[in-house]
Image 1 (cartoon, rainbow, N blue to C red):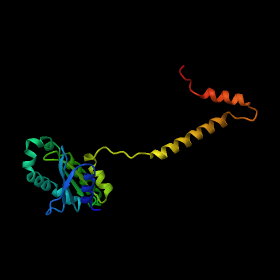
Image 2 (image 1 turned 90 degrees about the vertical axis):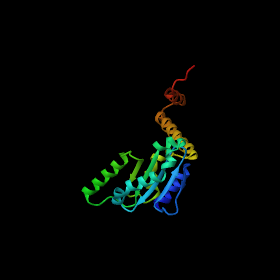
Image 3 (image 1 turned 45 degrees about the vertical axis):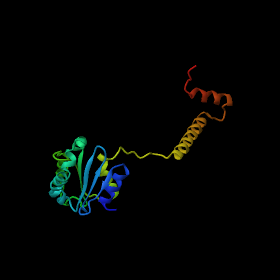
Image 4 (image 1 turned 180 degrees about the vertical axis):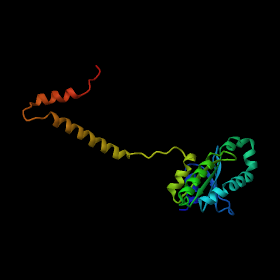
Length: 190
């Protein structure tokens, strides 16, 4: 899936209204009740660095009236432009570092819109990583509910077996084993 389609899909999944203008194949617009923005793609990092301001300014000019309306005052502060380069950084070490620094400075420049600028965005995972500031907090569960119960049972069984074997000795009487096991239990409030 191309990055623009992936961005539109991921933003739609979490409740953003998304759309694409027929004559603008390199961008997707998104909006919810408090955020308004555009995702746009570039072939290379150099294209992103050279073209992000122009695309941001066209986005602002095109949506100037909508952003100025009284009902959208919150959206003026939450206007985003997301700039995704499909290409990676330059291979030359010095130029690579300079390009990384320029992307960082683009994101730190709040003039016009809040910005997200990423390089080497070629798959859904890369798109999701770039869009994280716009997505709800996400956390992968460690275990499914069924797995959790099974793992807990196995751990308890292992702990019991170890505790039992640690007090078992050839000469121990059953009453001594029970007393030793009961001593290891935490005291209960009476």
